[in-house]
View 1: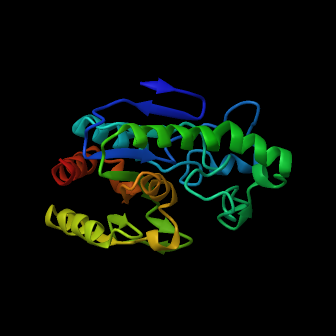
View 2 (view 1 turned 90 degrees about the horizontal axis):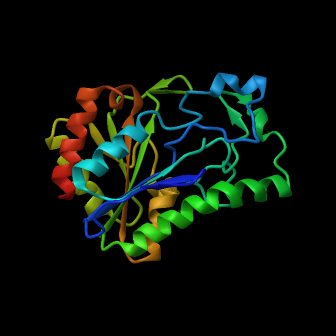
Length: 236
């Protein structure tokens, strides 16, 4: 295992069929930044990280013996699952209110965050994929059960862009395992919302998928354990 302020690499079998990425694992706002008082409402919520994604990634990496890369910083500092030209690389609003941390991200501040956190995360993911024989780069994310007042009934989403056959096969596998799963829900990989796994897969002619697990469920040990077993069965 190796780590940096921006990223943690869990070593594994680089001949595994799959390697794992977790872009929103961390909730830490590193020094010298500190939370503005108005942003304390966001700390520990889905706005600061993907709740349950860190543990799911670690447990799946252990089950598969697969390498994994995890972020160690809050997505509100800079979002590694977005391209550099994204409007939400530095999120300006959450729950209808301004994110004060990002009220004025000018050129020097932008470069400081990108060079210090975004680029080291992606450099580590690139090295992991390049070193591996993995067929699949699998991103692990979670989603809030209620978003802007709307309840979400699905339990799992499988995001993909080009990999329709592989993505739909995983959806069917998860449904057969007893989960309420859907393709490209509650976000679509075809809209660029599986940016990081797709980026690193395409660099080395691999295949990319991303899972979205509902946060209120994946933090429950029994649900998470069933999900790890199901994913292990698909990727082994």
